[in-house]
Image 1 (cartoon, rainbow, N blue to C red):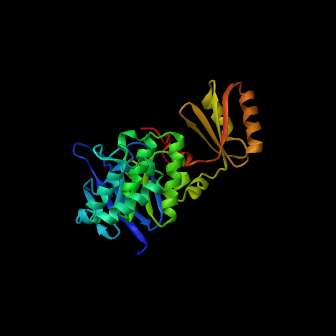
Image 2 (tube, helix red, strand yellow):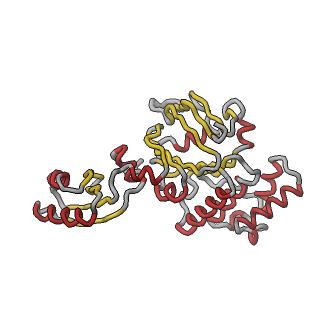
Image 3 (cartoon, rainbow, N blue to C red):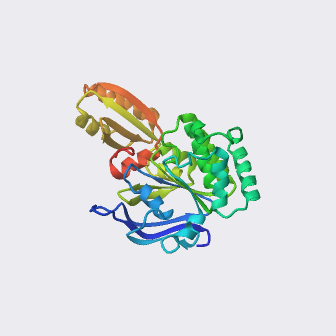
Length: 316
């Protein structure tokens, strides 16, 4: 267990006035040096889990440890071991970019010289040096997020927690943040992130736990989770009508692993795309069903989630 840096045992949280647990008996072990993702729709329990681990939420039951420290019994010590980037912009508007870092170091007990050196070092590493004396109001969304990550790792935390780190960012800023997190992880930084972006978890995470209703439905590497679907291709159809009849016919095709109705579409899981796609078109034509749109893609983490729950990943 020496390599386990985050551990929960039977972790539970029931908010007052709610009959359903936000986190329901969660058992989790995260290794030192991992980028670990909690993936799921809004309300799955991701943010509550992160809130407990970062001492912002008190659990109803169970236990949670960060670097061997019980986060409920010793919250102050647990906070010293954690770097936190929340969904909201929590930068101090009264301070400059440099001061947001410098005073963070001072709060963590660094002397003036050490804190100034560390602030200058991180401003350079996060490409923010030219904005050092600027107000945080001058920063774009992506730059502000970079500054919050720099502040979170300022005191060399054991774990960097990020809650929906790229929510609201433009694609360019999102990619820049991904690269930054990968660079941090390459230095040995353990990262735990919550996200509902399947691509984000797929690109960044060594392992992913897919959550819904406070429970873990699946936990493995993104590659292994996608292989668990049993298909190498997902063919998605939008048709005019007669979906039920077409689903019945498609299920009988050779090479088809599974057929699902997802919203207004039909998802056909197959191991033999080259042969199955023409068969799908022929079957629809023979059944006098018009195909309005046809898409082909590899299985994704969203595919895994749909297989487990029967609903789309981004569904609330």
